[in-house]
Length: 283
Image (cartoon, rainbow, N blue to C red):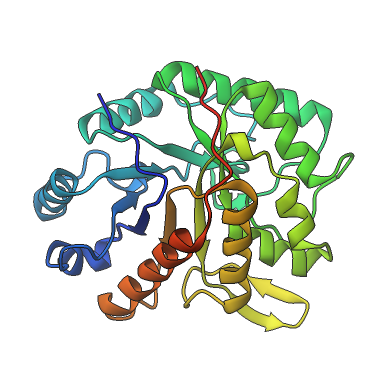
C-alpha cells in the first residue's frame, strides 16, 4: 500500500553523485526523492544499501527512461515485471515515463519526439494502457523537449490531450520543457500551459536549461532554474493547482544547500498559490 504525496511537496532527483549528500541532508531539505528505476533495478552493494536507506526515510517517486512508449518494438514484459517489483518494494506512489521513443533496433540514448498524428495517438495510448495493466497502477507521461519537430498533423497540445484521454493516464507536466519548446518552436508558453488538462496533472518537473541563443534553448538539467521558468511554474500553480514538484538536476551539481534553496523556492511558490484548482479524483 502506498501513500500519495501531499500536493504541496517539493522533491529532488536521487542521483548517485549526490548519494552521500542526500544521506547526510538536514531534515526538511526536501519532501521526496525521484529516481529512474532503469538505473537502480538489481543494483546492490553500497549503492543498493544507500537506496534502501533513503527509501526508508523519504517517499520515493520514479521516472522511467527506457520504456520507449512511442517505439515500434514490443514492450519489454520482463523489464516491466521487474519495474513493478521495484515500485512495490520502495512503496512508490507515482511512476512516470516520457511521451517519446528511445529505441529503434537498439537503444538510441535520447528521447525522440513522436509525430503528432491520430495514428500515433492510438499506438502510444495502447502501449500506455498495456504498461498500466502490467504495473497494476496508473502512470503519468511527461511532455518532452524536442528540437526537430516530427510530422505534425495536429498541435502538440491536442496530441498530448488525445493520448491522455485515450490511454486514461495522467500527465507529468514539465514546465521547463514548455518554456524551451516555446522558444525553440515559436509558440506562446502561457497559452500552451493554459491548454493542459488540470484534472490529468499528477505532478510537475522544473529544471535549468542552457541559453544557446535567443531563439535556441537546450534542456540540460545542468544549471539553476531560470527566472522565466519560475514564473511559468507559478502560473501553472495558479492555473492548474499545486502538485508535487520535482527539481531536476543531473550534472554540474552545486553544494546541496544550493539545491535545497531551489527546493525551498518551490515550496514558497506553492504556499503563495491560492490552490483553488483541485485535481479530479480518478476511480
